[in-house]
Length: 352
DNA sequence: AAGCCGGGGGG
DNA sequence: CCCCCAGGCTT
Image (cartoon, rainbow, N blue to C red; front, side, top):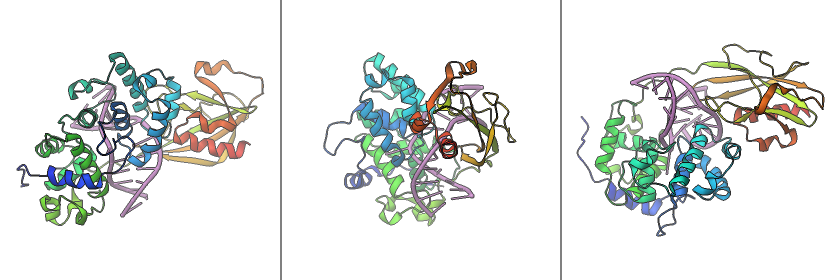
C-alpha cells in the first residue's frame, strides 16, 4: 500500500525550480510580469505530445509571423498548415486556427479552466496549464512528466491508463495554492531533466527524501504501463507528375491521416503494395528502385515511388480545386509532411 | 474505453 | 531497434 497522505513537495520543488528552471522562449524572464497568454497558449498546443527541442524553432517562426491571436486569426489556412508541416499531429494546426478565431471573436483568451476547456484543441491538460501558467490560478496540471513523477513519488503500481484518476487525485494533494503555474512547470522540468523515463538521476533530485519510488530501489519501474499491440505494416505508392519545371501537389482531406496538408498524390494505403493503382493520370509510369519507409503512431508505411512526365501545356482537369502545380526547385517551401518530404527528396534526385 | 493521429530524441 | 514524449478528438 502506498502512503497517500499529503506531503510537502511544493516547497523543495519550487526552491529547486528557482535555481534550475529551463530558459524557454514562452516563459517570462525571472522576476518579469506574467507571460503573454497568446504565447503560453501557442506553446502549450505545440508541446502536446511533442518535446521542447522540437517545438522551439516552430514557436519562433509562429510568434514572429503571427504575434497575436488577432494576427493568427486573420491568417490564411494554407499558410498556417504549411508552417506547421513537420511538427506532426496536424489536427492541432486546424484546431489552433479555429481556437484563434474563437478568441479573436471573444476579444481575449478566457482566464478560467472551465472556459478554456470549451475552446478547440484545449483539453484537460492544456486548460489547466494555461489557467495556472498564464493566469496564476490553482489548477491540477497532469501531463506525462507529472504522471511519471507522481507514480514514482507514491510508488503507484496501478498500470496506466487506468491509474489516471488516482494520479490526478494524488497530484491535487501536492499542488500548492500559490505559484501553481511555477509548480506545474517545475514538475515538468523535473520530469524532463531529472526524473526521466529510462535512467532517473535520483542523486540530483530535490524530492528524493520524499520519494517512495526511490525507496523501492527501482524508481524506473514506474509508471507501470499496459502492453501495446505490435504495429501493422502498410503499403502505398506516391506519384510524381512532372510537367515542365513543376510537379503536381494535392491537398489531403481534412479528416484522417495528415489531414488538410499539401501532399503528393497517393491512393489509399493497403496491406499489400498497390503498384500503379490510383495513379492520378494515365501515362508511361516509371517505378523508382528506391522506396521510402516511415513510422506513424499506429502503423509502419512502406512507399513505392512512381514518376511520369506529361506535356508542358496539358492541364488535366481531373484534379479539381485540390490540385496545384508547384515548382520542383521550391518543393521544400510547399510545407509537406515528413513522409512526403522524404519522397520528394528522392524524386528530386532522380527527376532532375 | 478504445482507437486515431506524427515525428524526432535517446537509450 | 525500441520506447518515449508539455494530449485531444472521435466513436
